[in-house]
Length: 230
Image (cartoon, rainbow, N blue to C red; front, side, top):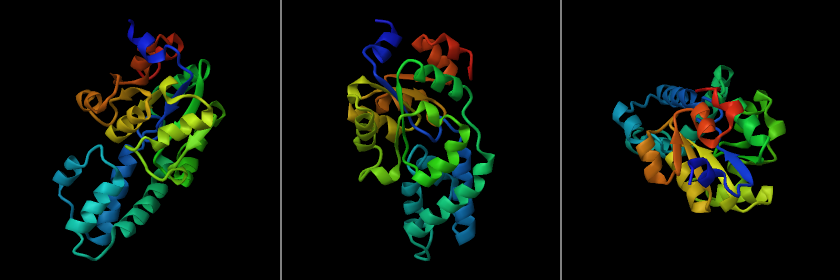
């Protein structure tokens, strides 16, 4: 069976993550964390960044608070400061190459949803200015769920909002927790290697992996988007 048939056969919806998939936010998240540590005078070895690559910011900040802050600040202090620093950096945000053409191609074929671990306010600041909202019928942000990725709740909820079965959804993700969340929900998963290597993403459960939206569009047979962001 051709790869695009296994990914899109009997498909009703395409669901997108936000950070690292639609917007090139990962450098801003890293800079925001470094600013937080500088603000509180916390020295975090580079090995910690390497160790937590692909993990959530909350996990990194919790580790820093416990092991490198000498009890001076709490995890919640770091999380709140990091959120503020990230919002200050959003003027430098750019969409991932090829994302707009891919979203338009997906919207011409299927129903579209967004599933992010970010807050609703972050989504509004980071996503809404792109002008792509008209293509999306459902949104899930951190406030909408009890359990965040890698729990299946976020992707199950966005599928429910669209009124489709998770098994008939293709998820585009870039993180290990996102891939695991989508797979646990029963979705098909195509991963972009914008944040993690292909081997790790496939080990987490991704059915397919691509370096760019252009490559993924070509493998799905979406010719109008295959030359964008290749």
